[in-house]
Amino acid sequence: MDSLIAIQFAAGIALLIAGAEILVRGASRLAAALGMTPLVIGITVVAFGTSAPEFTVGVLSARSGHGDIALGNVLGSNIFNVLFILGLSALIVPHRVARQLVYWDVPVMIGVSGLLYVLAANGKLGRLEALLLLAGCLLYTAWSIRQGRREESPVPKDIPVRSKGVGNKGYRETPAFHGLLVLGGLALLVLGARWLVSASESIARAAGLSELIIGLTIVAAGTSLPEVAASIVAAVRGERDIAVGNIVGSNILNILGVLGLSAAVSPAGIPVTSAALAFDIPVMFAVALVCLPIVLTRHRVARWEGALLLSYYAAYILYLMLDAKGHDTLPQYSETMLCFVLPVTAVALSTVAANQLRRILGLVRRSGL
Image (cartoon, rainbow, N blue to C red; front, side, top):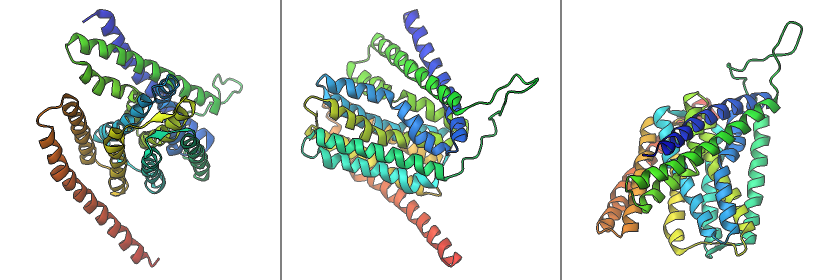
């Protein structure tokens, strides 16, 4: 392996780690300085920032007449965000999920995923659909910020409050300073993701991997690397609202913001193929839907649920590979997934959610409400 590629690969990882650390630290402090909850910062500031690669890819591809790339990027990123990132971060550190996320943001994610299918049913996302999506993006962001200001945000213990004074060389950290930390962290994340993807492609080709495998793994996940780094570092640092809020917020913004803006700047709109309507969009909707019973289980994402999400991502990638190659085992694989694995999972999650609902109703009855 070329030494320059190895250096670029290592530097990309280092920038991702450093950028994620700076971003999460700055975001948590910004939340405290502005009197907002870390969840809202994760849903808005961090989600917008880590979705920057999706915005860039979507707008540039749409302007050049390749709107299908913008659509594929959003669908793939949303599936990757939930199945891989949420699964991996929960496997590392189980997440306690905020009430707002359970009763508002996850249902909104499910709703906009279904809305995308309705808007795309005619085979195209045109200017009218673009305006509807962008209006939804503005409304969702404004509501999230307003909701965040209603809740008191506790100051994290690791925030030093310094002020100028005689014999004091310190300073008072302002929201502007924390905002600069967020921007600096985002810049490092985007640069690190670009270097890592480029180096990984070179390593994969040198190892003799096909373009198909490279496209389905490295390139497909490349634009989501900022979300990976930010969510995992946030989870490890104990900022779980930022970790989960970043994932849910990114998925909502990908549909409303990225697709809305991409469709708006595209000369002929974004075409939606029959394959996307028959498989990719329903899969994205199902992935969003499975989050609800998971987060309803005592408002947390457990390790076994994280492992379940990761196993589904592996199954999804395997399906894409078999389908692209036209492999003989694809019908048997599809039948096994549809007739056994998915129903068993649905029954298990529904049972857990039903038990949780009965527990909540029991508490309500005992309280006399």
